[in-house]
Length: 131
Image (cartoon, rainbow, N blue to C red; front, side):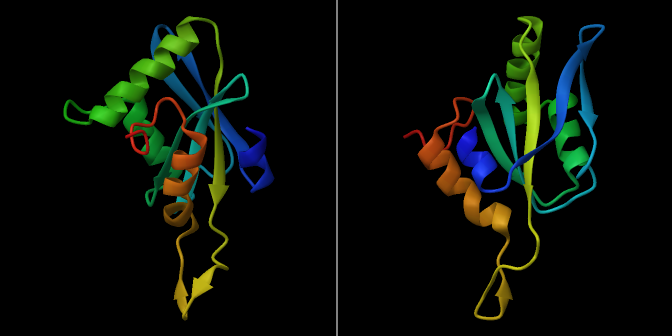
């Protein structure tokens, strides 16, 4: 978790179970796009993802996954299991401040960092980077 905090990740929300349903609590950054996010429990990085959608809309996919959304279904199950066991699942995020450019082109920070973070940190809920 310290490595994420060191590059600017901060807590923006958490998951909870209410009447056996997964519930999202998001404060700041809920409408931010081009964002890198992580699910953390007891200081352990469980998952790292990115979205070009508003963060709240992306999290809704985990809360109410569609029948063909395998990543959303899997993470919904993992989050629910953690919460049912009495653990917390917090949401941390890193926003793109728009200042990174290369050759006059804006570089999407979330897109640029996700693969490297997953490869190096090996969050157990991420499937990519584990081959």
